[in-house]
Length: 310
Image: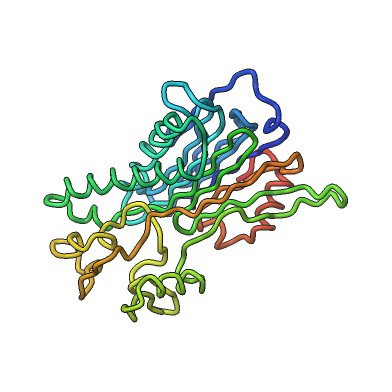
């Protein structure tokens, strides 16, 4: 499980004197075994803290916080970028996204001189194309790279506007103050792509009307082609390009029949939110958190323990 917690506070509406901070996967923090956390730090739009619980010694997940100029070479608008990359099958895809997605976003933001859903989509597609190139290059010597992928959850705050883009089953949830009662309510900001959700199964079936096995209930879990739960990702090339779904790829990933169109998608769901003074914080986290906590339970946890969340 990997999660990032970002406290917006009032700084969303008041620029900081020092506009730049960068934190990536090598950010300093506290580690005990497979548990890692960093208490409150500063970014352009307020404060943040992070926590990671690794499933095993191989780190397949990455998290990223970039704050300052969102354009290349220091040009373009200022803001904050948050990335949560929940890898599977290996660490290569999440590391590649961690190294490249924000850089692509900066290039396209400079070209357009603004932040927008179109800019974010272009950055995702450029990242996907780049990982395809890596898979093609490594395929003869490391065919298992075709089965490596990652979910991607991204938040961008620019000019008091929050953009949330998602591939896979990570989730962003906002805590919003209800002034009349003093309560902080949970508001889900992202759309998930998991075959356990009926609307996702319906989407897959509509995109693949000739494939009766596009979603399969296996051991009481809905899976795309009986293999994977998510319907969108970066990577997982073996379910996007038929030429990589063959030997010498491991048999458990190979389909009996070929396919003409990609089974998984790399098109992110993007939502746009105008930030309000009563918006207190946002939780960005992988499914490992949401499998154990409801949206409101997670918001209550952050609200009741604003610093040093574990």
